[in-house]
Amino acid sequence: MEFYVNHPILFVMVGIIIATVLGQSFYFLFRAVKRAKELGIEKKTVKATITSSAVFTVAPAIAVLVGVVALSKSLGVALPWLRLSVIGSLTYETVAAGNTLNALGQEASATINEASPFVTVLWVMTIGIAIGLILVPFITRKIQGGMVKMGMKDKKWGEIFNNAMFLGMISAFLGYVFCDVSLAFEGNFTGLIPVCVMVVSALVMAVLGLMATKLKIRWLTDYALPISLICGMAIAIPVTGWLS
Image (cartoon, rainbow, N blue to C red):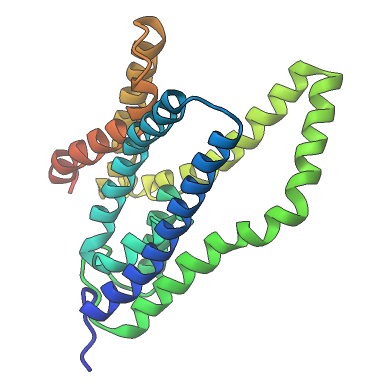
């Protein structure tokens, strides 16, 4: 059988997995509604909660869709659809796939035509994100407990430590952005493309954040991420043509 990244078999397999996850979601939704009735919560309140949750789910879904489109060129639609729908992370999956393709000597914009590199990318994306599932039950409670104790003793240092952990996570992705900047000294300015995209995305995010707080447009806080992602991808097109 000839390998194809968009083979119908892949869509069937991915569809079964996603259908299982959706089934679990509906199961717990029905259980929650039933429990709400037992507790005497008004139907109006339950309906409003479900509606608001469904509406605000659209925001992260847009970001996920952007990631699927970005990865579909090389990996097809089925694999990105799976990885970004079930325990997936947009920032991790795109970097993991890109690094794996580069290590295999393949262009991220070129479609994979062989099963071996496709499976390699699949394993890297899956095993990497699964580490969190393994570590969370063993170390999260201890870390969280330590942070709570620190916050109770000194609120200021508790906030500093929490922010430091977040910045440490962000710095890992910043290395991916700036890793090829030095090529500019050799006359190759393509390494500046991700920097320009990051700057534009950050500016858009900052502007949306100010609008949400200063102008009291609260819904922007939920849609700031997908809007900044789309703006970053849009600016990448002219910037790539300019610096390439």
